[in-house]
Length: 301
Image (cartoon, rainbow, N blue to C red; front, side, top):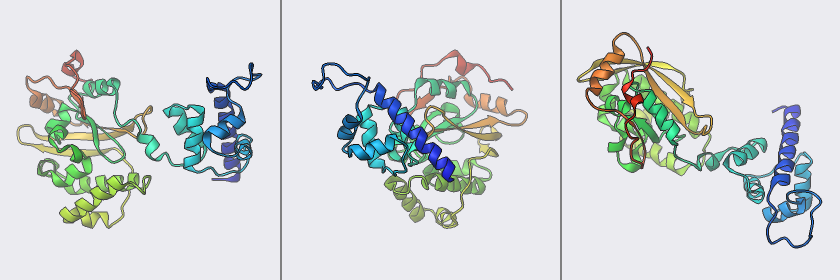
């Protein structure tokens, strides 16, 4: 980051803190003054609630070149009563990794489930930064992997790619797709260097899959670029899709992975797999959505 960018970030951080302090609720126990001249909290009150010195907090609000730690920033956020979105923004302005703050809400709402339904018959799934299955639709379960049948602690796309035989058999170019999943996982894991859960998953896969051990050692990293996939299904035959990955703006630690039908006849093959069933979407640990007209309406071709 250039010196100019660093200064601008500090000034934005200072302005953000002043605005949030002015909007912060005054403690009901405050009887020190019958009437305040300014709204919100005083600087000394924020410093006291956050457990930092008044002088240090003042320098922070003035845009001085101080380097707050994650613990201090989180303490200031609590003192100001920031919600999750504002808390994440404060961390960004302080040039701190989002860390576990980014996944405090590790579930999606009904609007995302409706989106998964509207995408039918295209297979679609929502993954978190550890590649855990967060939500999915029935087309994904039918064509790729039924996450609801996996052990709760193994509902993970990386684990399924290497440890579920049906997944390996369904992908015509399994080797390339598996290497791509590893490379994307490694890129995500770099943002969480002290994540024990990811380390345990990698250790387990190294011990159980020679291919994973070899490809993991290559230290390859990739972005989640769009690419073509070909599935082999015992009833539908070859199903060609275009894999597209998108971040959820409101919850950027989640990504929506969609297999858009590609090529003539693909939608018809997916509809044939559906048959008379009513496909829906579901979230890990929750009941699926009730069927809706959207799940019976083919998407535009």
